[in-house]
Amino acid sequence: LFLFGVADPTTQKAVERTSGNAVPMLRCAGSIPTIHEWFGYLQADPQIDEEFTWVIESFANQELPHPWTSVIGVGSIICYVNDETSESTWKHPFYDYFAQLLDHCRHVTKEEHIKLRINRMLWSYEAECNSNILTQEPLISPRYVREIAEVLKVDVITEPYMVRTMKVFLKAFSLQYRLEAELDTQEVKYCLEIIDNERN
Image: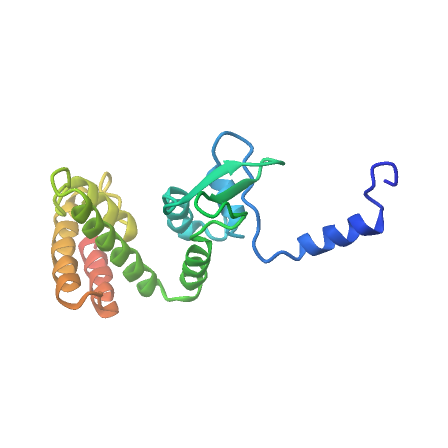
């Protein structure tokens, strides 16, 4: 160890300083990070946090804001660079947001978690409409029926009779979202009861 300088007291102090780093580093073995590497970056476990995979996927798909770019640095670690200030960091510009979102999801009820996901889906739909209305699908479409079914744990392939119900939920939630800007947890509970009743 002395030969390579690892046992040197100065090196050990530097290692101690970086090991206490509050922000983990996004490792990347290939050309882009895998979903498991994103799980590790958010300090999540793929088995324990399986229900929150959507948070990690959203983080992985999040575009970097201008003027940030990313590069794979030394040791296959993603480094984020601000092109205007030349500042570089291992911390993704949206790291705190997604870390808090994951933590929030871990501590809320099932209904609150579903409400959060549907709110995000409607917010994303609205943002897509604002960016390019000409290519935007209508809300009542196969894409959004699949999305809300996934959130509500309905398999429309094995339960095709639930498609109509998913469309009704999309209409109801979009109306409530438009009028109140947030969904009501009680409405989510009603939806889960309706799903249970339709399955029986």
